[in-house]
Length: 258
Image 1 (cartoon, rainbow, N blue to C red):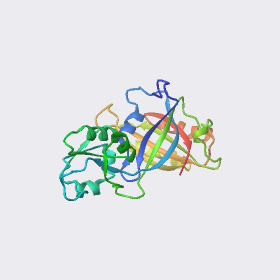
Image 2 (image 1 turned 135 degrees about the vertical axis):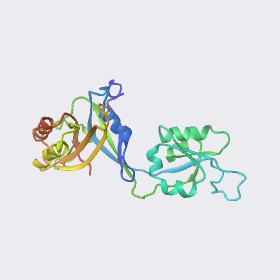
Image 3 (image 1 turned 120 degrees about the horizontal axis):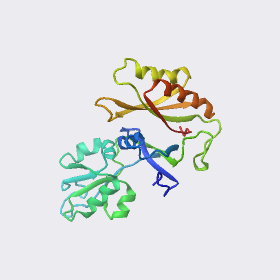
Image 4 (image 1 turned 90 degrees about the vertical axis):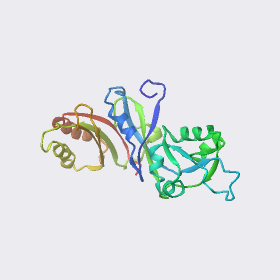
């Protein structure tokens, strides 16, 4: 939607405090097929996440809180990863089925006339589908938080501050860059990482995906934080990275929310 211009902004989940990075978002940011060349990151949003077990109660059960009748549970893999304690104890007898989103899981559970399906989803999804809330706040941790990245169309920029995502002038700037290094060149990855060290930058995350160029060659993602908001300062670092990496792409810069 953002790439085509049908939406001014997009929001994608990037990482969760319990379950880590969201792999399908990394896949999209990696853009190995060149489909999102005009999309960049311009902001971030943190959201506290609570999960609920949605389904239909068993009218024949003596215990109204019984889950013994549940045979299938639908949800997104991230939601399952954030609720492992609950599912491994209360739903050990049920099959966990990965689907594209928590809302899709709720729809599938609601469509099951046998009343033996459930979903790990939001309270809002319960209202939308008419499902009962069988259990509340089933996430493993009370501080379960997901960080979302805000996307827009256009080249990355530090100077441009979208009003909706502006932060105080004193706040640090986060940036995200992807790169590849020669597969069989000893020290190639370390050489790229030293570029950030030389400029005194704090690396806040490092992730990787298979590059699909050659087996066991990887596409790396580095997020770094800089106190200096000047675009020229970040550009110097990116130029250093481009000189030593096999390929690189600046995915965006934005004001840090945390």
